[in-house]
Length: 147
Figure 1 (tube, one colour):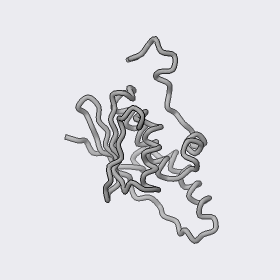
Figure 2: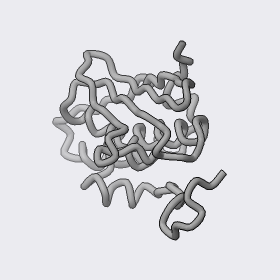
Figure 3: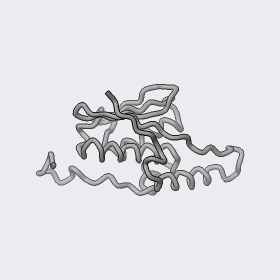
């Protein structure tokens, strides 16, 4: 259902390749990719209206965990400017999404870690993030309905 049929720049697809994720974020890392995929999942399962969806990002509030929020903004259309995404400081990492009384929690599955003393550390992280982009949702996060 279209909610702004008369607008030319509404309801544009949010399919961003890894290049665009990196362009927006400044580099490609696992958390922006994970957030993007979580945001896409939310949009597909709560409806395509980014004004109706609300997102909460639970994390430490610092990088790299907070990078999840950048990906969620791109994937779901929930943005800081619209005020429908919020970062909540937490020792646990997960995201919650809701729309019209329906909601769910997406919890990342454990990520691979790399020793940061490796001279190719940044390249390894980038390649790993690019690989994550193509994995099925069930290999990236668990899904739990909210009551």
